[in-house]
Length: 289
Image: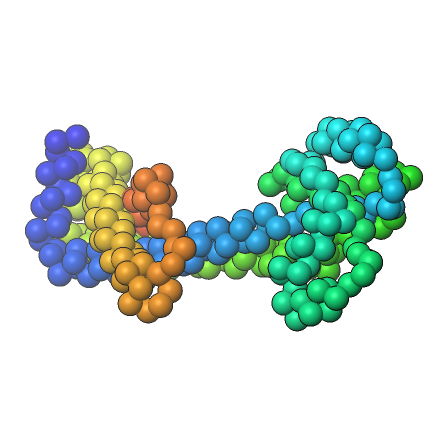
């Protein structure tokens, strides 16, 4: 291991310009990937906040006995998708309308009869806040004889599902694209190093060195470059996030930065890219030397 480390450090010294260029390009690729990861992280956070508003509302007939509603609420609470069931009386519904629907405040103020029916508001568990599960819960609610109508904003929930799928697909596609770019960059720089040390490698083969013994320093070099690139990318991401969080661009509110696990994942991702790029490059070109 000491020999591998020494050879890797010697490679850095012999090809300083290539090493700096390699680390810079790796850091830039990981930095762009990290920025996109931050965008995806905050987008998921925003979508989770929006998804918390997904609920099913069952409007009940006026005059339904409270005991019957209580028994039904207990039954609905037992649904696997349901997190919470809350009864909203006619008076509470009218109070909400007067508070939230500003454009209709004057109309609601002069009412002699409350037109709003009582209802049961059903909040879903986080893993069931999508159109399919909300629709299934709504269908079951329609089976209760005291339920007049059931609504859950079907079109809105379906759009939310589509947005989540698009975000996941775009995130995967861009992440894979930057990963491939990073591997190509690392592979090219390692190949240049291999060609630069072609004479030395020939001498090592003449004295009986195996291919894996020769590959070792290059693989370790790639891992080190990936690690350094990951550290630099993490620092740059933190600097950009700090600028936004400080409110310099008016977008600092509610932003979330990577946690320790995400930072470690970024570093490991850089090391994996460095190892992969080195392995591919050395495997393809070492026999040509």
